[in-house]
Image (cartoon, rainbow, N blue to C red):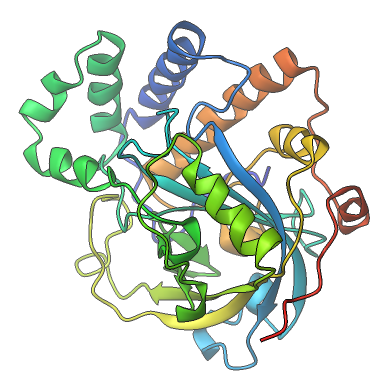
Length: 335
């Protein structure tokens, strides 16, 4: 992973390092006690691993031309669609879209990951509140935390929805990343052509069925606009408050195209299970910012060690050369 370096826009509170260790210990304990620790601690249900192409625009704003956005270029991408801890797609919960760009120059891991959810902000303000939340959760009573954090309860509840398809959802990275010396918050906006026309999922695997129907049966292509909200100042676009809503408009940086493809082979599922997605797989110009992101680095490191140890999987990042092992790209259906 990219090593943590203090960023000029971050304000690290005293005692945060100890709080991060406490959160990490509690997260690992929860994984061991309440779920299969060989699975991801968050969003364990894989709906699909899809190959895509991430193309940086020629019209990136001058202030955003850093790191992977420094020039027009294309990257192969591995896109993991997922759902939260509940096993049934018909249960209200959050929906994830994680993007891994491959063969990224300047990245210590050779990759750039974006972890995105279909909710615009995180539901915990900072690491100190994270400790309180995990303490209540570890005791089997998260309501104790939410009783004194009503706004956070509303933000958490907003994640819990039933949807028809991953492909017509807007996703947000929720937490800011560096854009060189500046910062931004990222989003993934679906094209109207991604609309499935399906009803909300009513079966345990309805969302995977929707993806199979879209990419395999109908052989359709999905496209997204990848955008950024620029940082202005700590008052209007705070870095350290993960629950904040930034008011700045999004500016387009890139497009993500996911071609028709057969992603259903068991080997592709296993390949994805052995991948690690973390915002700290990144170009140094895009270091994750804020206390929750600093906490994520430690939590992700430890959870990945546990998961890969149990799965006897090698902890390494893929390259474009390995895409040949995935299911084939299909010809698009005639319009």
